Length: 457
Ligand code: ARG
Picture 1 (tube, helix red, strand yellow):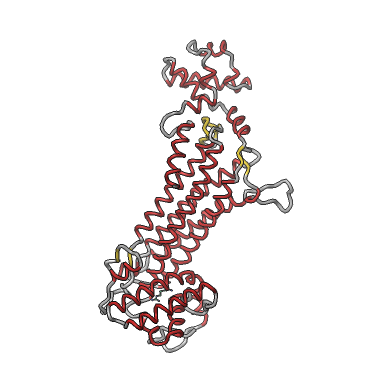
Picture 2 (cartoon, rainbow, N blue to C red; picture 1 turned 135 degrees about the horizontal axis):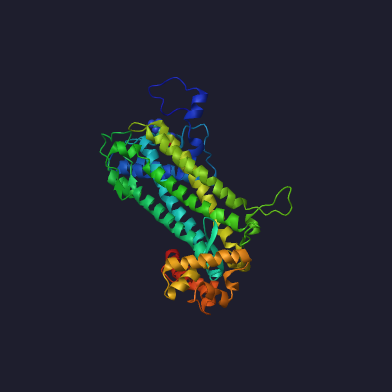
């Protein structure tokens, strides 16, 4: 394709240089935003008398045709074009002639690309929120389904205290809620129009940036033209949000992988989201969870990559900044794909309450409750802690659990212990007594489910 910027340079660029320079391979996905921006720009130009009303009408009509043409496939994006902005302008000029050459008056590709990215990511923030909500809904449905199912809670991956499976998985809904907040904030912060900043210094034309921003739904305009064209904070914000989200999905994945293993056997993942082995017929591998965990590293890489690209470039626009797109798109595609897998994968999880309960019965996870019981009878916590510890030690030697110790034996450790000790260390009671706000009781799970119902509605 002929270079529209053949101004000073008359000689042709090397093919290999074009290959490095071209961004159409990845910025083609901005065509809708590019066209939307150009339509608003033409309207502003005509309102200000910079182009005529007829020229504006021709431009708007032509751009509308290009949009539907790309949408329905009748216009193919030329892979030899330098970027999407040049492509759209050249098709427009081919289509409508002279007026097409005027659409780029009082703007530059520098403010144009900054605008396109903001328009694009603003919408992607909304999509992120809705995809995250789908996962939260699936988590809540699972929590509801297995509301009273008891499992061992872990610290250091050692059995610690009894908890509800519902309480455990709702943790991920809270993480995801914070992700929603982050994408919402990011969208708000990027809602600033850079268009009209032009190449770097603004323009001598009598433009109306406020009007153009309003047409595009931006509540603010960039107040410094250099900042307008060189700011990519919003791209970093967006990738950071993806990275944080991926970290959450990755932790979730890790538990799905562990808990679905033969060693734990707490849950079973739906067949549609697992794979077999080409050699071991018995295998059911949690590939989707592993890939999510794996892609997390890649999204972190996108963030580090862009931050590093930006750190040394002077004002204002530099071509380095073209690198923002692949980082943003890769982070977005990876995160969204994982979210789309997670919602149905979580929905299809089958929990195995009997296995969880039997694991909960081993490991002395009611030892804290035994100590708390003695505290209730007047003993100081530290003394009770030591007695409970000694009981655990002796039980391990005998190969029994706290529930097996006879009342006579209990009394040897402390005369304060009575028959009601068995009730105090019963696992269901242990969970139900954790009524402190945010604890693992059914009541607290219900409070959380109410909270998420409000967010989802
Ligand atoms: N393809 C470029 C990018 O994505 C568009 C801006 C080009 N500006 C320029 N002065 N060469 O950054």
